[in-house]
Image (cartoon, rainbow, N blue to C red; front, side, top):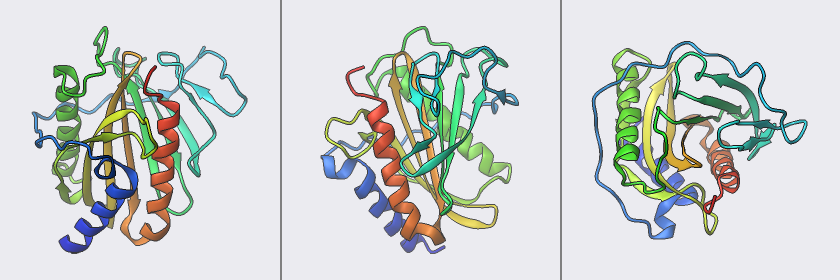
Length: 226
């Protein structure tokens, strides 16, 4: 994948999904020491609260209800990390038959309360940790030709009033296929909400629109004033 093509595609996706159309400020890039990966997950969770609808899964810490279908993607799994290590929370995975996939992580990292300020120390430190985890995965061979762009301050979706979020665009080769990926981080009801959305470069004509719609609809769940 040529750098010019990847940069053009990433820039286009950013315009569709996030911050530049909103006039959002751009923050400087961040980096940090690598951290160990989370322990092996188990299916989430025995004894979970009843979901508010038959097709929805409710996260107990935030009460966010994740429907079976979100933004054209289908929910594929929910994973419990909290039972293995306090503070690691849970994740929800979605996939689209056109090739796009997404994972939403909800966790606290042991913080008793998290501010909504994206420039606060806990949020900046968590973004650094998340970026370092990606770099560590690349160093271990999970990704090749990894290219991380600057951190941007934008919103979780392009709709008016969407929740503020930090964004890191990246490109890489994953399982032999060039991919475009976005890392987003925000806070909600005392939890980090981290989102990874990715798709193969070859499916960009379909997957770019799917990813945009998914982030927009996720943003309607994570309401700005809650």
